[in-house]
Amino acid sequence: MTDVVDYHTAGEPFRIVTSVEVPGATVPDRRVFAQTSSEVDAIRQLLVNEPRGHADMYGGFVVPGNDDGADFGVLFWHKDGYSTACGHGTIALGTWAVETGLVSAAPDGVTDVVIDVPSGRVVARVTCSGGAVTSVAFRNVPSYVVDRAVPVKTSRGDVVADISFGGAFYASVPASSVGLSVTPPSYAELVAIGREIKWALDSVAVHPTDHRLSGLYGTILYDDLGTLDAGPHQRNLTIFADGEADRSPCGSGTSARLALLHDDGRLGPGQVLRHDSIVGTRFLGRVVEEAADGVITEVEGAAYRTGTATFTLDPRDPIGTGFTLR
Image 1 (cartoon, rainbow, N blue to C red):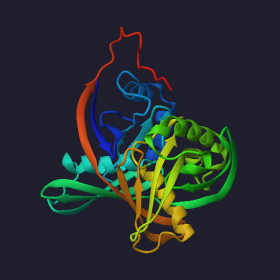
Image 2 (cartoon, one colour):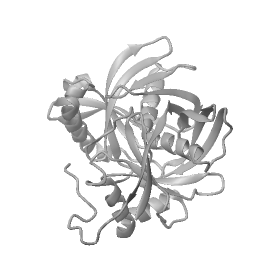
Image 3 (cartoon, rainbow, N blue to C red):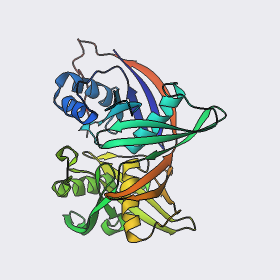
């Protein structure tokens, strides 16, 4: 039996699991163990696959942090394995930590929840009002531009992509360059071309110091909706792993977009990126400081509990840990 608590952040699911022990000295080490352990990975499969999950399900195993400076650590997972970062999951975990009392918080004000993730240490700054969580702004590991105008041949013609890092590597491509817009009627075509671009550019994303973080995690197909008084306004669909579509504006992807916009000179001090998803939900992103290895970003959103469950596996069940249809 496995107990879970489910949240959604801007429409994207996040399934929290606290009962799985994963050996390792650090969160990155635990991630490697989970990737190679059939016993641990069977639990991921059970919770993400149909009939208990679905092809776009997401979640995480809560584990100890790297040291006493963190409140806890997390191993993020999806239908294809274990990711290096997850902004919407970080927002959900910050909400969960305060709502459950795992991290004490004043009824009014901001409380920092420190979380070790595979790409480093992040901070979920949880705002409460009247004893309820109203929003979470997470401060990410340094985000930076990797390469610009990388050519890629696709089934919809030749395009160029900008590569950046926000805890994971992303390729940013204007949706218009493949003849699409980020709207629900184009969903299937966006997923198909995003998946194609991701695999075409996977090998160009190499982390300079930790090979475990290498590989292109996703493609961000975006519409530029102009510039407001407060800053840029964009809408995106992020296709990550092998064809998963983020219902939220993608947290770590927003950090990757912020690095590019800052590099373009479109996001100055005090300005905010209004970042919308394909379902109309929103994150607010800002650059809070410059660092030697990039920029420190803050991405703000809200998460809500959707339920709790206890999942079981009947040993007689021929489907076992389940299946996916994508």
